Length: 120
Image 1 (cartoon, rainbow, N blue to C red):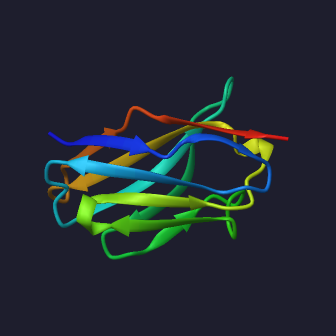
Image 2 (spheres, rainbow, N blue to C red):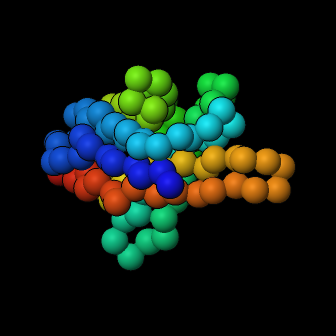
C-alpha cells in the first residue's frame, strides 16, 4: 500500500509563487508516473502535470511555462514549482501515483489534497 502526503499549499497573491511537495510512503516500484491534478469548486478534476520514472514530463496548456514538475528521489515523491500564479489556479491540488506492476496490472493512488488559493 502506498500513501501520498502533500504539503506546501497556501494563500498567495497573483503573480506569486508556491512549491508543492508530495512524499510517498511504501514502494512505488521502478515503473511509475507521478503527477499533480487539481479541482476547482464546481469543476472536474484536471491534469496539471505528470512525470514518468524516466523523467518525461507532460503539462496542461494552461500551466506551461509557469509550472515545473520534478522528482524528489530522496522522498520517493514529486514537487511542483508554481510561478506567476493566477487567480484561476485556485484549486485543491492532488498528488497522484500510477504504479505499473506488469503490462496488465497498475495501481492508482491519490493524496488527500492541498488547497492553493491565489488572490487578486
